[in-house]
Length: 126
Image (cartoon, rainbow, N blue to C red; front, side, top):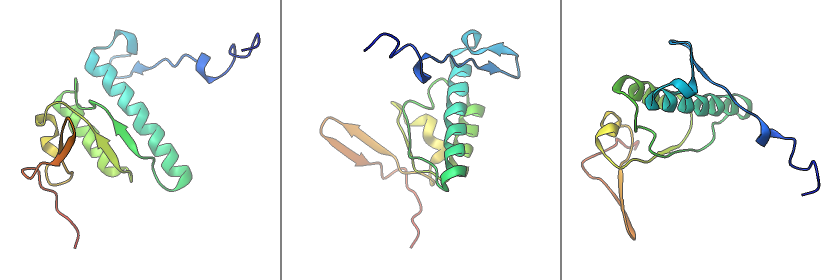
């Protein structure tokens, strides 16, 4: 790139977050608190997009339940349910997603296949 070509722009921005209940910067938060801050930022962005466009973006959240305590996980699932968006959540364990039983489909991925988990039914509109 020409001199100065990459010296300006959004990629040069530092975003600083603070966990308000504790009044501490994100870099001093626990892993779970940092994850909650990150997820809340993504959800706020999705809500902003939805308010401007009339629909939320497709959300792909990898290992989103990892490191979240049960209260934060419940808040996440409630926020996702309230957001008019299609969401894909990944995880290596089924247990954290148990509260979504009846509200979401669960698939098991293995090399070369993707299979719906019949023990994790979701009601379907007729």
